[in-house]
Image (cartoon, rainbow, N blue to C red):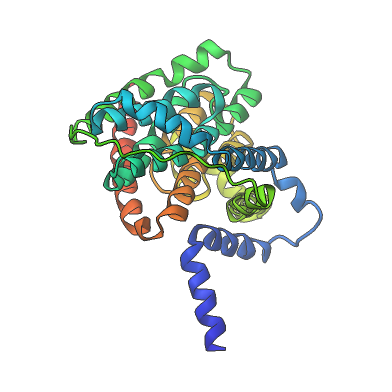
Length: 337
């Protein structure tokens, strides 16, 4: 019995985000009787897309594609600050077109490998934190940049141009924040190691690929979808949302995102208010803050701690501090506009 408890505790520590999401989803099931309608809560397109992308990334890793790209990139960069700048802004620009989630799934593993190659593992936490912020900033530029903006673009019928100008002030301020943060990265020269020949292990290739997929990340998203689906069907919360959301969309967007992430928050708020511009501002600002505020935050965190489990606490502290500072700044901008 003690052994089972120890194993459960170890699992909880190892998969803390999934465990908390599952517990909250199970608690919500006590108030809404489980039925086949639960399957309708889940955005299967998102789950399937994430799975396919993770499989593709694992294929690229096992074919040493990241290794080849890293070797081409490193000789072109002279110092640590330049390297971090490139890695951060790759996420910013790519998230505009391929979404923040996909950008991080591709480039966080690339970053971990690049920093390991030049023996600058000490910069991994700050780099991944800034990459995550950059991806969440870049995805504001177009409505196709993130799942929550795709939801709002579909619901609101706001034009591309209008969508861009709604979020432009927050994008510009966030870019200034990122640039200022990069000045704290030292300009130390990076030392390129002697590169060995790349050997691709083709034995049990597809087994390694599918074992490399983070299935608990997918289950975390499923648990969150079930939680928000049940909240919408609990009379108390439904009445609360109907009464308080109208006129307070930005605040609710920020608050809800911190608890259930901004994709479910977008779905939730758009069901109770037609002030879509305010909801768009709220859920995009709300993507900064806690680890759970954006699904992209969870993705980069999970990728990082799979490689460096001992970075967990330090990463959470640095990531949260940076995000909360930016969240406060952006909310201040909202109050001034």
